Length: 112
Length: 111
Image (cartoon, rainbow over all chains, first blue to last red; front, side):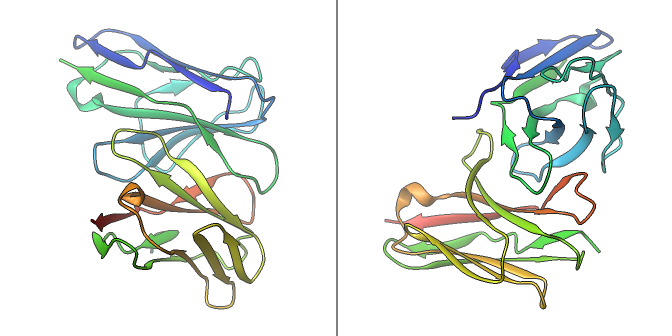
């Protein structure tokens, strides 16, 4: 079983609030990812990281930001939440090399 | 052209039949290929990976890879209602910086 954790699992928040979605893994993986997925729709990569102090934007433009100060931790922040940010956010991690990614349980965000 | 393409389905098969899912990818240098299963409202979970041309079998699942045709498939034998889910094809690009996913194929197994 993969050891990657996301908190909170569910979040309902008002427009304009700042929020941080937490993601932690205990596997020592260098690569970490954030995906956004609307119900019944495909996964979109929004951010990824090769390792500490490395962050890159993914294929889908996002108003969120990420940081990677520690190997195990890859938080995602929205400075001012909007209803268009309502979605499921999935964090994943993998080892260096051609290996599979392990997913956290996701955070379902609703902005009202 | 999308990096990874799958038939979106839905694919409906009777219980006990074989479900066949297809995936094509654009980067000829891709090295590793994965099949994930995602139940509604849940996170994707890995069910198969394949690195070399040919077939790889794991229980009722068989992955097939043809790098020359840039094609990877998944067969589910003796399909069960519990196999009803969306199946995601994922490919590691040659430069290794990310894992790219297809849009997924939704499979429904009729009892």
